[in-house]
Length: 513
Image (cartoon, rainbow, N blue to C red; front, side):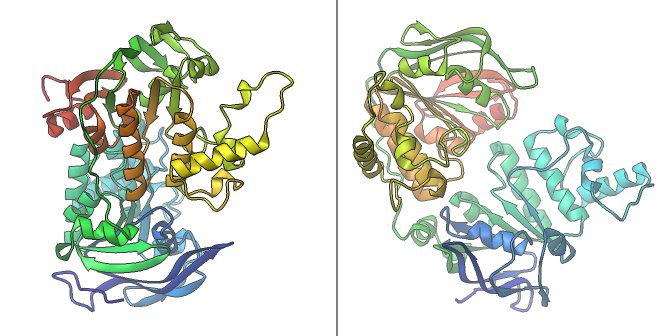
């Protein structure tokens, strides 16, 4: 595989070199003879569909996995990593998508947590000054005395990055770094990444957002089916070409946005208040209406009450005040089964834990809402269930070797399509779709979004809750923003100002935005 040099970097300035990397799991080849070269001070993106092997490759580089075959060099020195600590000693640190911070400790305390060189006695003031100096040097503006629970998601991410830099990381691996950020936080992160690269740090990042790759990366490596199929300069490629390399075909988000006939109110919330697990008010007086044939999108950074709102609507959490109505029926404290019977379907944000039964077969997962329809003493026809499952798998293009497979063996995209197939196969009026494309590759995103729009055209009322502002803007007829449990809007999506929505996601009120 030919590796093109990044502009401004000589071929001898390699920071990371991986050759012939293979990684096998029982029955799966995750990485197959992968080569990767990353120049010092560059920003290098790793693209690929779910299951393409990009995360496995980065886990090998960060010491989480040991390769079955192949070698790694860091600054020309051959390395053998048995654990993440070995990788950190070699100057490589990984910031995962889900942060690992102690909320009751300060920023400075989190940064030095686990540093065995400090000993039992150390000067807190000196530690604080060291962390503050490191934050200034790298452009990571964060208060070292602030507690983690006081910080925004973007600030917490900076703390994770500072932790790696404090431990001497010269290579930073960022896993989907913008997944939980508002647009303004994303822009700030990009500036910080470019600043770190300008002072000599090397950045590798995994992302499925092509616009981010084109805007931020010097180079991009595309992976498909465990192989690195191409490495190129971003200035020499295009989004369409990257998609073609990722999925082996063109992917066109040519959604049919023909206006549909808006019908009656199917879902109405009035002054809804909901508490979280800690007893704090997570949803604060939310009122909204969703009509047949429309998608109402709720944008917001994770942790602002969206999960509690969806759970209150679907009966998974009790509301402390207000009302939930479905087609005029009061279901405020309704049992989940009662809400299902009223025609409410739910695509939860966690596909594995709440969206499916991972150990059950695809046939059983598709029948989870059908068992209760059998009359007492009536046998459930196994053959009819199998035929129904085969029909749904074909209709929703779920790729699986057999309907008898456990759901846990499906890729993220196929599992999400399986959940949609189950939820949409019953007579429903309302669909609550929470982060329906989170973590999916671009081909699966296209499929899921087209399915939602098709259901809208059939007259379904859809409440779309997503942290992906681009998705909300692409699909919604009206858009509201949720911040600290309160709802602003909704606004008509036509001609909406994306920057204004981003400001509202960050806490600005509607008039200020």
